[in-house]
Picture 1 (cartoon, rainbow, N blue to C red):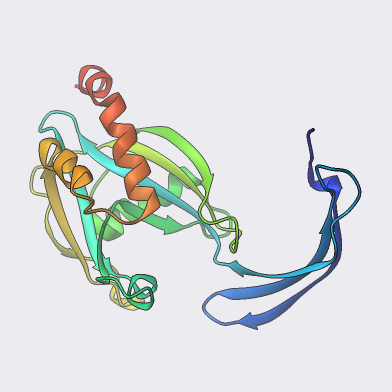
Picture 2 (tube, rainbow, N blue to C red):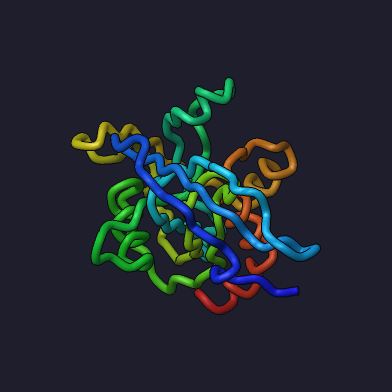
Length: 201
């Protein structure tokens, strides 16, 4: 059985909170696999925006440029709040995902990207947020990558490191990454690395 958006009855949607982000409350019903309709349910949906992210990979040096920064969500979850991540950002009105990854690579890591290749477009956490992320891998020159970057106007304090691919694999094995975009992107790179090293030289 195939369902689509026409199989949902939206009863009401209202904004419960508008701050740096937004929280909307939905009242709705949806068709059931066994036939008929569900009871009316109410769910809060976190409206964070639409994101784009990129794995910055240097095929000559065989290095990935990673960033590390403070994340309040990790802090709230009781975890170490400085996370190893890939470059990412929220898409602003009028921007494309490709424009965002180019802008964020420059702002967060002082990198110029080329030859971006789309990995996937996925829901970040569909049980409670509408956020989607378009994920890419792109070629960079990692020579000299490092230091601390970010926009002071956004209170960004971002450490940048060029990490050898062998070390990336070990970090994946040791469960050192704990955010979806980074894990998905680096595992994709592990599957496609040999092709990229051949094609991107």
